[in-house]
Length: 308
Image (cartoon, rainbow, N blue to C red; front, side, top):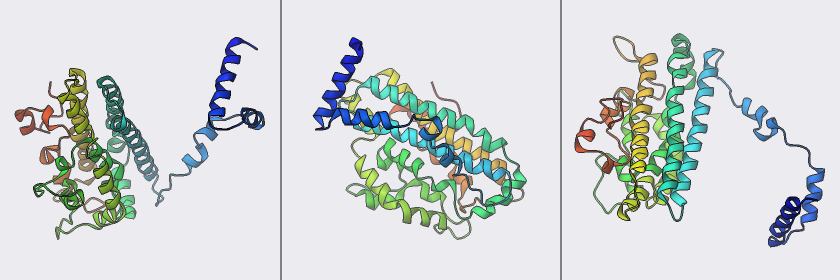
């Protein structure tokens, strides 16, 4: 037995002893266990069984698969932000490194949107989309969670009452609700009513939980303690730009590609008012208002280029 192997066994024995467990029993279990395979590790068969188109149109498989891939990237974004939120102490280098990861995820998401914009036949899309009513990408709760954990809750509101007010009181003022109104009646769409019924309580709890640990709050704490670096500022500006301008412009391009039709636009599957909801120049939504000049905020979304 080599010295290295002996050292590793001693470490294992200490680990199991600390938990009141017998190491030899676990080693016996290891002897009996089969080798791990790639397909078992990632649950390949299960993963490939999750794409279930509702129609016979071939391009619907592209549509559902792309959205599932997007949700997996959103899961990674949430994973990185949660690490920043709970890091104690939070260092500038850790914050920066995790946000660089997040920016890479959103860069890949933006680039992959070509699959949606150019990768399906418009005629097929306009047919199979009718079988998906009233579901909509608007109902992606993970994207709403990303917004909530990224900034102070009030930065996501429109015409909200002044303090004091509980998150539960402010929920109805979330900016995205304006985009989920019936085009004809201006009433809440079924898409929004379904979403609120399913997720409202959990989103309110998330906002309350992240009130003092969202990305903007944690950044401002580093600023107040003199720890924020130029590199961190730059990656947070990039993140704001990628999510609130580039990502939403990609959605807008897709909507125009498939839903724009003269003399009137085709309604989105959820009945959402995408013409005014999607353009970032309309929303002017930012996670880190202190990182942008008054001029940059005034012209927010008018250019797809990151201000330098």
